[in-house]
Image 1 (spheres, rainbow, N blue to C red):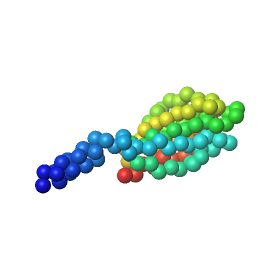
Image 2: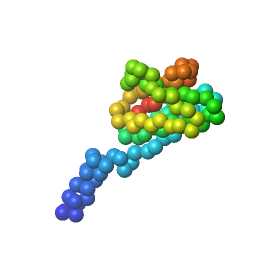
Image 3: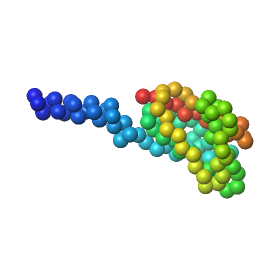
Length: 108
């Protein structure tokens, strides 16, 4: 009985306090004026990393619902990362190229 109690307690601690152990890094490439993939689904705690792999073009990742001002540019070789903890859909675009759009969907 005591062994079962310890196992249950350990499982609860892992589930509640150690979500970082299960968090993933997801890469979105920026290439030929596109976010690849444009739509991604992640779990709470996951981190998305956008990498500009263009040879000459600058871009940015602008979540207008979070930031009113346009963020800094990502020049070739630069990256930007953001962790997502809240469930929902988070659309974004490239400020200099507003036809470049993407969505991060966070689901449990």
